[in-house]
Amino acid sequence: MYFLERNCRTAVKVLLVFVAVISAVMLASALSGYVYADDVSSVQPAEVIRVAHSQGQRGIQKALDRARDNASSDHPYEVVVEAGTYRLNGALHIYSNTKLTSEPGVLFKEKKRDNLLKVGTPGIDSQAHGFYYQNITINGGSWDRCRLHDSTGIKIAHAANVTLENVELCNAENSHLVETAGVNGLYIKNCRFHNSGRTNYGNPGYECVQIDILAKQHFNGYQALDSEIDYVSKNIVVENCSFDHVVRTVGSHTAVIGRPFKNVVFKNNTVTNCQDAGFYMRNVQGLRIVGNRIQSRGTGIQIFNMAYTADGYYLPRRGSRAYTASAEKVNGVIANNTIVSSRGNGIYLLGRRIHKAVRGNSGEAVPKGNYYIGNVKVKNNVIKTRARGASPILVTDGRNISIAANKIAGPHKKSSALRINGGSRGIRIIRNVIRVR
Image (tube, one colour):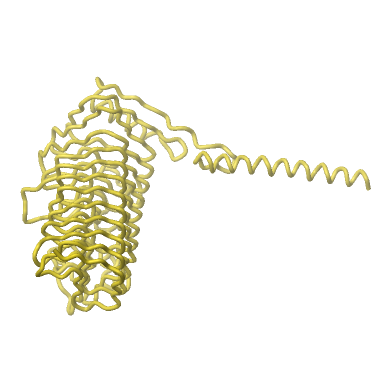
């Protein structure tokens, strides 16, 4: 009996030691941010490729191609670019599991009609369906469009887990600085956007960061666009960025009916000298616009479920049967923002009832129904508007919207400080402070 008890105690001790070792490994993995496989081997540190200024664009692309051919999720690559000016004769292409880092003093200037940087190789990567390209970071660098033409600066599609950090993007004309579609996980932080202008005043939709849809009319050059229109972007965060002398900051002027963009966050950004809208979004669920300072000639924050025309709205690939009106609820928070608008509204929430099917420019027949905007909390904002006919807060066809503890100043004497329009119900207005000039 003693022999058995002693061996049992020994076995228990060995088991406890084994458990302790495994626990320590799991704790180390949690603290380090690495993911451990079943054999308890860690993800390897990124393999670094340095590119000298003398190697130019060809050297950078050669390094990115090497990463394309060798990088994996557990063996990422980092391409580090030496300081200097790089005149780009066409776009750079970046692929999965790669980080492109620019040292301080790196300037990319557009020389040839093309994008500055593309995720993947559009038109060639025939396997690039769904969220194909993954784990990509662009860190640093000044990306100058040079106002040469109307192509996008950085183009991202069919991708997951993409980060832009410490990047400067500037000098676009009648175009976007960043254009995305079919992206699951886009994180833009500590970036500077400036001098994005327009000469085509009939089209205000030049967002610095456009959240687009996979339709040829809007986002060309990638494989399987129309067949994958249901791949609508989600999990997007833009925070601690600055926008100056721009048309619009972030948003979308296209939508897939019944397929809303999901989980979009615009947080702690600074917007100055904005021409059209400080933030503009259509067809979204899970929206947080928090802690921003917005100074705009037009509307500060503009959220539509349905515009007054159906332009830019598309049916999902399964047709009208995939449409459900209940999917159009926003479920959003607009809080703790400071908004100054000289010619537009402060916060504009727009829904719309369509009494019969209508067609937009795309030729798609948008089904009749009530595309109301709902489930939004508008709270603790400081809002100032000036223009006649503009309102600090305007709601059309809203449902279950709370407007609470906002400080409103300066509405024109012939304007409403809080304006609730057609078809709205369930609007709660609580403890707002209004100061009329």
